[in-house]
Image (cartoon, rainbow over all chains, first blue to last red; front, side):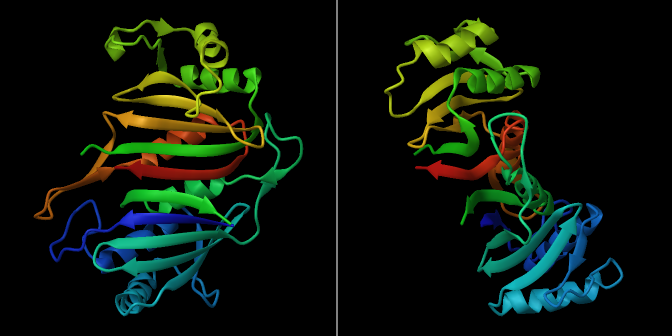
Length: 142
Length: 145
C-alpha cells in the first residue's frame, strides 16, 4: 500500500522566500518540514538525520536526485512509521511515494465494523512534509 | 479549455441515509453552505438548505440511477464545489468534491515566472476533516481537461 504524491517543483536559479525554486532547496524543504513537524527522520541505513547534519545530507541527496537516482528516507511520529521514496523528474516535478511500514489499523466511530487500515494519518503526514510545494496530484494505491 | 478538478475518498462505510446525513452535518459544522439546485437559475440565487432538506435532496429527491452520483452544490469560504456521494459496486461510500470552482491556488512568485497551481492540499485536508469519523480506504485527486 502506498501514497503517491506528485509535487510541482519550480526549477529556477533565483531564490524564492516561500517556495522551493531549485532541486537543492526542494530537498532541504522536505527534510526541514519533517524535522520541524517533530517527526523522527532516518536515512536509508536507518541513521538519524537532524538539523545538525541536514546540510551535508541535503547535498548528498541533491547529488543523487540530480543524477537520476531516487532517495529513500524513513520517518516516524507516534504510531506512524513510513518509508518515503523521492524521485526527481526533470525539470520541474518530484514524485514522492509514502509507504506505511507498519500500517495503522483502527476502528473509527462510524462505518467500520472491525479495525481497518486508515490512510488519513498517512495522507496528512504526506501533505505536511510537502507543504512548500504545489501538490499536482495525490493518489493512494496498493 | 477549462479544467475540472476533483478530490475523491473511498470510505469504509456503507451508502446509507445515516452516513450521508453525518457527512452533511459535519459539513455544516465546518460552515459549508448547501444550495438547492434549480435549473437555469444562478447558483447563488438558489435557496440555502438546512440539514434536513439537504439530506432529503441527496438521498430522496436525487435520481439514484444517475451515473454521476448524488450531488449538492456547496459553498465553503471563498471556494465552491459539488459535494458528491456515490454508491460504489460494493455498496461502499465514495465522497468527493468535484467541479471545484473559485479554486484555491498556490502561487509561486518572486521567481521570474508567473506560475500557479491548484492547492490540492487544502481540499484534501478539508475532505479528510469532513470524513474524520470514517476510515479512509483510498483517496485520489483528478484533473480533467
